[in-house]
Image (cartoon, rainbow, N blue to C red; front, side):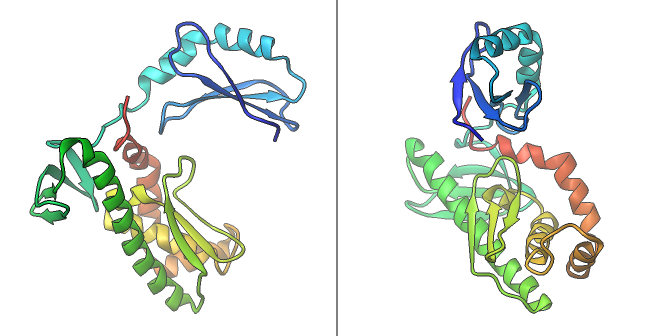
Length: 232
């Protein structure tokens, strides 16, 4: 892939991220349903001026896609936040602490510190739970992984490298327990089968017999999780 550039067109507030690919045969436009980001892929020798004209010709389509994207839900006191599949009201709490009790998440900080403190806490929670589930599934399969990280990935919920490193989206801590457990089982199964062959799915089913239910959940409900903690 060649260097990334960006361009802007009148009537569209967000910049368009432009990438050139040697394998691209035509120009394509996309709007991320998770973040609202606009992307354009060009063949290697396609002129940027022509790309600008292409984007302007598709302004109405871009506007419609942007307007239909899920609205961001910034972290703030009083909001309803899903946590492990259940909605909780976010309220002020004891200084420098985050506590969960009966449908309430209490965050002990000033308003201007809330977003950062809640973000860090959710990532710590995600890593702890995913580490526990990944270790359990790895023991069942008789394998091990080298490290585990959590990130704010946009295009995938998890990954497993050939070196045995697991990576997950921290946002899965917002999902039901079954969805999180399926994701951990999916990535750990890649430690044995680095593919999506029948043998791979047999491993996933061994770990999570109802995995198809949670695959469907990610397809139909997963996008919603990307709204939280984002600003307009």
